[in-house]
Length: 313
Image 1 (cartoon, rainbow, N blue to C red):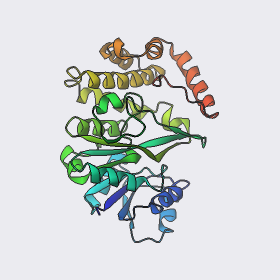
Image 2: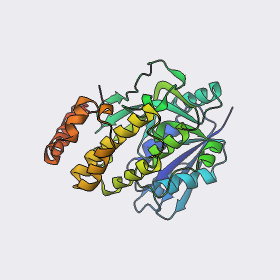
Image 3: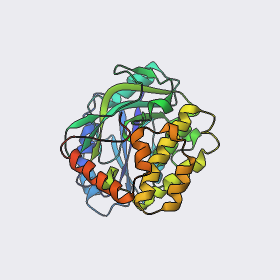
Image 4: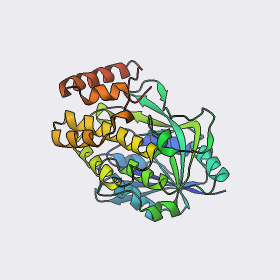
């Protein structure tokens, strides 16, 4: 039975990390190690970690260099051939590692293994992520990663397994990107390797604050680099072009709200309008003040377990 190294970047998550670690230690698959990378935390996160007595857990402390450096550093210290990532405020179902290990065992030649996941906003009900054209019982290689990821991404950081060899060969997370570095890595892998997917949802994306998912921090400008990285590739592959255009749409809306009209106009020019649905085309031409109101409405509805999104059909 293969072993798995679980990498958890940790920065000021003292109120979440206990639940996260308990979800790891409750796994039905037990052949794993946990490497927590303390990325310069200034709260009580380290004390919480040190309260756990389990020989599979090790804590490494680095200067604050960001989540990508923490993940890459964790991989460099890992001892297993398979890597699973988990953010310090997300949770796994007890069968998560077993789910991913079964996928790896069944399809050992892939470069990325991904499990379906739930989204949980503001401690509300679990909501299933939606994957385009993927059946509810899918267990195997995804025919077209980019087409399958146009609503929710097939790969999400806290729900993937990557062979260490693939991770190192592909170059790991881009440490110069403060936002979008995960999407960048999945693209680089999916362009070269097969991706296997289990439609059994076994991870939970916990979203407790609008700042986590729905608002637009200044670091999200780094996502502009995503389009520069692949500008020569997204014209020949139809599904990849659509996937990238939907990412452009997302960033363009963010840039409009931030008042960055230059980036907004640049992205709008690069988008093929036929790759957007009706709601997305309308939003592209909606004044920022109205978009801001719509985001507030979206937040209010999420607290009532109603999820409206321009990406959902």
